[in-house]
Image 1 (cartoon, rainbow, N blue to C red):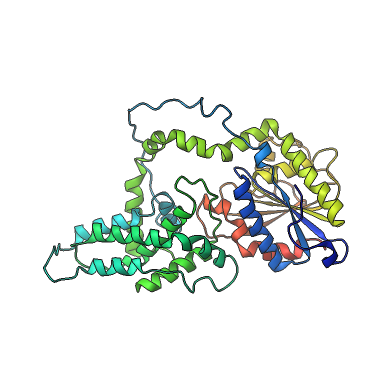
Image 2 (image 1 turned 30 degrees about the horizontal axis):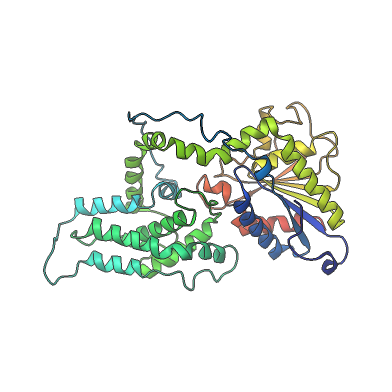
Length: 427
């Protein structure tokens, strides 16, 4: 708790600014260490004079199913079908929302359209099926030479590289099996590249989503997809879907929507247990939040004693709520000069009159530090504070170019965040 992870005090010459990183909901040890390393690297590129300290509360104060899931009902064999839904064709991130659910959905719809619209060539002795040529090219995809531009791209490439071959093989097999025997059709290159990328992300996050969701900036995602598309001979380097290809995504999404509720019911036990850290931490904080606030207080105290300089609280999501509650208490920890909330619900909870230490009709205490609130418009869990606390909060908008929910987990992979924070950190 609060131990320094970079730079010795003697090397920096006296007191230094300390940035205490407070995580959000659903985070456990492995996930926190990845996020902490990302924050440390991002701040180090723009402000090498600051030190980053830990505040990891998830293990001790986070939620768990203490009775092993005894409260979950046993599923019957009855299957229900949910309602319909539609994809917004004007949303350039719609296809990525689809591929988060099923990385091969767009490719399957493309294959169906190819069979519906073209002639079946069938098997001919001595003739090489053109789709086998495409599949072979997909199997040869590589990330070598990608990610040399700095920022978060090298980290993304490193996360995906061990899984690229398996993802490419699965996409190649899908192309061979679903498109073999049909006439050649244009537009496969970007669709195959997106499928390979989405599968590699899924594999990197573990078979059941057990690993931390990859924090990925949209520009880095598009760079990887663009490099894969180039290798396949396509020209869609933007990573977005347009025209006929977007129509493919829309049809695929709408074909997949109706089974969602049945799939959720069939997988309820796994889904519930997997979501406990994220949703359970929020519920537990509402009635057992004192432990989280005590952990933050201790981290601030350690930072003040060790760094002998100003302290910044950098808090994500639920961590931001806890920091606001703590700093609004009658005896807030001394030494905090700046609060930075990222993707936080604190302004929303204040408007609901649901904060622990501050009622809706009460202003922020006079001793409350300067507050910067960072949000992404596509993050449905990120809220703004300037109109809620006039003159006391500065909102900073970033654009990770990711659909929700990945927009909520990708802030610390977005270099623009650190560029905006660099001049705001006290010296």
